[in-house]
Amino acid sequence: MATNQQLAKSAAAGFPWNRLWFLLGALVVYRIGAHIPVPGVNPVELARLFESQQNGILGMFNMFSGGALSRFTIFALGITPYISASIIMQLVSIVSPTMEALKKEGESGRRKITQYTRYATVGLALFQAFGIAVALEAQPGLVIDPGMGFRFVTVVTLLTGTMFVMWLGEQITERGLGNGISIIIFAGIAAGLPSALGGLFTQVSNNQINAFSGILIVVLVAAVTYAVVFVERGQRKILVNYAKRQVGNKIYGGQTSHLPLKLNMAGVIPPIFASSIILFPATIVDWFSKGADTSNPVVRFLKDLAASMAPGEPIHALLYAVAIIFFCFFYTALVFNSKETADNLKKSGAFVPGIRPGEQTARYIDKILMRLTLAGAVYITAVCLLPNSCKPSGRCRSILVVLRC
Image (cartoon, rainbow, N blue to C red):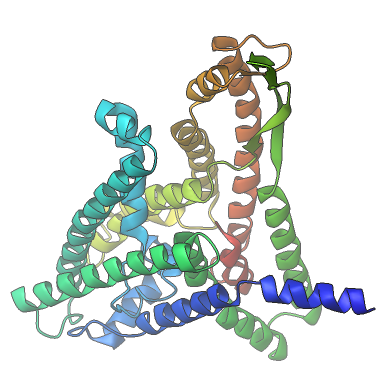
């Protein structure tokens, strides 16, 4: 018993409590900033706008910002510009020999790429903030005092908020418990869970849905959560042997290791890109068709097209699934270079049993990666389409949408 108590005390002493408290404090700061509004906007008209666009691209970005966009707070842009800048830098590193050389320089090269990513974040945040300011001014009655003053205040506020969130994510990575950017994204999505659960219990108490359906939804959420965690931890380990080599009187190598390939290597990027591409045209059509003459065949066609691409509709589900699968393969090919991996194995004296080092190893890894990516794409598509299997107005979608990405 004494031994068990000592082990428990040593385990508790080794737990990084300081990092945990820093993480919780950072999340509190993030959630406080998500409730500080940008001046000059009519909150009533803003609420009406987001109520009409809750199933469009604004609703998606509002979900990732934890409701900050619908309240038009200083963190309205969230971490989206930084994610976009990171993806752009990854694309540039493929086509640019200079950036590719930086990636191979080790820690110093990564620091330079991070610095360039920050500069790109500033540029994207400036562009998005100005676009949001102009778009808000175009909505009647939404901006209290439109003009250059409102645009300047909005751009500066949103840019400052984005840079602060980016800095906060980096601090969480260094002083917290893990990837700060992912934790901030999770905090924004999970912020809608309490209200969704409250709405579910209200509907059950008002007999809008029966108790069995409510219990079934909760069980379904728990089952999907377990499945997501289980699949995210899934790996395909490729056996790798190291050749023996003699240096002086000592023999090195002869060891066995594994090359781990994740089942879902693309992460949350495919659903984000797929949602943006599908919802953006429908949202634009809906904005510009408001107040237009519905007797016009072109206007009527555009409105019907936008309605058919709304979440929950068959066309939206089909396009969403195809886009997710495409971006899964695209992003996996972007972040994992099988030829480079095979060359690194060859240089270190490692080889896959039965496979010739070099080009054949790269083809072998590509073959395995193709199967893994297909399985991961099907898994991501199933998880992301599950909330849309209910009607957009249903509470089922409100709860399960937290599990998307």
